[in-house]
Image 1 (cartoon, rainbow, N blue to C red):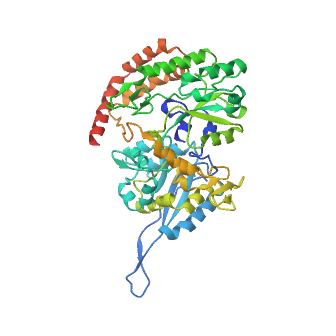
Image 2: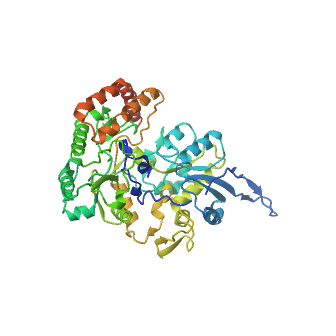
Image 3: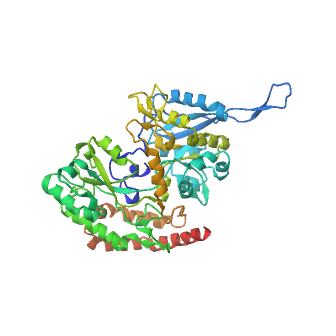
Amino acid sequence: MDRVKKGWMGTTAVLLTASLLAAGCGSKGNEEKPSASANGSQGASPSASASGSAKTEENVNLVWYTIGTPPKDLKKVNDAVNDYIKDKIHATVEMKLLDWGDYSQKMQIIIASGEPYDIAFTSSWANDYFGNAKKGAFYELDGLLEKEGKGAKEALNPAFLEGTKVNGHNYGLPTNKELPQQRVFRFNKTLVDKYKLDLSQVKTIQDLEPLLKTVKENEPGLNPIPGKIAEFLPFDLPINDLPFIGVPLDTKEYKLINVWDTPEAMSYLETVHKYYQAGYFPKDVATQTDAGDYFKTGKWLVDVADAQPYADNLWSNDAGYGVVSVPMQDPITFNWSVAGSLQAINAKSKHPEKAMEFLNLLYTDANLVNLIDFGIEGVHYKKTGEQSKDAIPDSGYGFPAFTTGNMMLTYLNTNDPADKWEKFKEFNDSATSAPLLGFQADTSSITTEIANLKNAKDSTYNALFSGTIDPKDNLPKVNKKLKDSGLDKVMAELQKQIDAWRASK
């Protein structure tokens, strides 16, 4: 999910369509406006028994901020959640959903003001996980994971926790969902079948040319590539916003290079420029902010997306016709892919142990996970099998399942393959780790240079990577501008940090 929302720029891109929301990301549910509330109190009170020696644990109330459109029946589900957990962990939780577009800004205010809360959604794309962890907003979880969070730790692929460490420590619990990135070419199967296009030969962007040519010649007025597409270059980036600094994915030396000054980058850019000149892209692709609802109209041949098991089924259901995909790469676990969805505990929480006990249930207790994700059985969904359900339309409840807990404990939709979660586990286990997995850059000494480099990138990125301008003429000028903006200093500082990080491991 994380990357779907950030659009197509750099390695964060999936492709410009909101229809890309896949099961690992869930869907924007319908969820209640938050209101400030102080934490409850925790303590022990003497028993009224004659012995006077026994003590009972007093329930505490946890305040939980998370992302999503507040649904009408949030309170009804929240009450059911509390009825279920209060005797299990001697705690209740107040669920406070903040809408998608407001979440980051409102959480910044809440954190800065010191408003009491216990748990909050955080990620690489909303309520900045790494930034908040570095500035001390979140509670260090290492000790809690060994005690109250042991079940969550056991449920997660180790790469989730490794990739979300900050200065060697964990400050958030990632959702147990798809772990790696696997970028794919995604095709409109209607056109593939109509023109008998051979997808078996497609592995790189260069391999698309005969397919694009066939459709362009036979479908007047249709741009085979409907908008900007996300590049895949075989490099790992220490800072995602600077897509020209990286190390090769197969590196043995971990030496940073200028990615945009490589044969791989030039070959990619020459290809998209060739495709632009041939009319395979819309003419205004460089300035395009919305490619339109091509998924619904079917007026497209190929785009680029990030996949997961059975993603073709999801995309086909969304489109209303067949969609098929071809991998551009094997699954790779990057820092950003493991930080797409986490829950963190407030560094100032009065009840961090209780907060972790609640979070732990979200990774171990299927009844609780399904209650939070789908609501009350018979009211918001109906069971269609032991592990499957159908949502009840307009039921008054919806929750973005990808934002919390263990998705692999959740019910399947009726038309989902029975082995869906097994395939997710296989997908996660099959991934290789990117070389910089677990590395987090300290940019405090190079903030000015990074800002200058971002400005230099933004001034040319869209035109260059949409194929609008000729890379042979323009890429050398861009690389000179990057050097003039402080590229060498930034690379030297990041290299020093990477060398120290490797030595510490």
